[in-house]
Image (cartoon, rainbow, N blue to C red; front, side, top):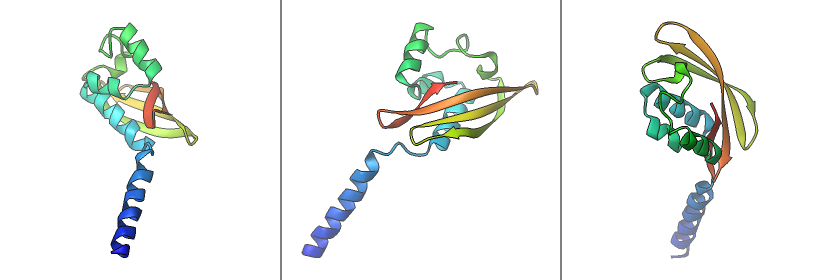
Length: 123
């Protein structure tokens, strides 16, 4: 019985210790860009930091009208993300967007940890 109890306690500790971790910022950045590519603006808003959400709300939400032209629905053919700066609580990516017309645009995507999750603080 004591071994079972000890195993249960260890398993519970492992689960609880992992809860506060924000996860992989690279995966978060890729998913954010994929949502932009797919035109899923409401889902994009869920990835934004509090400050970015306030700005988006001020602009009427994340819509094609409030986005840079190369981020608008149907314009992104492909994208690449390259981390350029990384700390424990923030990551900056160089974003290269290839549009459906073949033109390429370079931008910056910043993530930061907010409320124990990776959030987009600039794009």
